[in-house]
Image 1: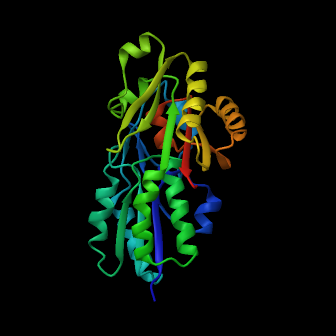
Image 2: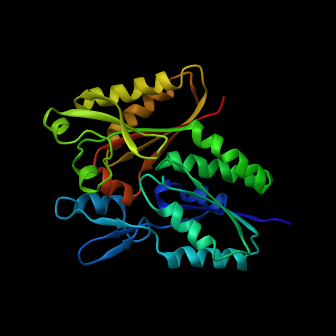
Image 3: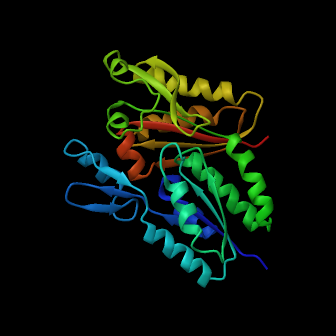
Length: 282
């Protein structure tokens, strides 16, 4: 009889409650300063990262191959026959390929790696949906066949206070840079089919960007019902305001306040991120 494991990484921003409920194995990214290194979410908090940004902007690295190898070894010991790994977008990280490589060394576990083409709770939504399918007794084949359609039904949009940190982290892709900062242009950023950031729309000023974020959600979800998450990176007050406005909309089937994004995501976006992740349900 098959036993299916579920693997993800710390950028999925799942709560401890969800991780325990579905027995999810979580790979920590690494945050690297000049003289020290931390495991994302385990050895460092988002607040510590934001506090340190004026002094030093760290770099990040994939979860170690050793961490990945250990997870697959433990899965074998725990009697798992199959594994589904849902990872941060391949357009933002090499983790998908790394997990595939390590899984090939563990042929006794049949593994499917799903590139979320997303980040934060856009990735986390997919992990939770997969957990529900495993809990419901869906077969490995059914899950593998369903996940690509769920990727297409999930969406992420976010705004940041400054593009400075996305630029420093090399994650800015097609997002407008220096000129936009000079003009106080605030892009509403999403992730394209290639898994990379792009400017979905842009406005001038912080207040207008939050309002535009709300309007984009209304446009994209018109005639649909969605499960929604609101998250932030050291931008609690603004995120709470967006949460309250979105809660009133007919397109919202359920909504949760997802809280702080992971430290490794926060170091790339900088303080002040407000984001939406949602998946079409009907």
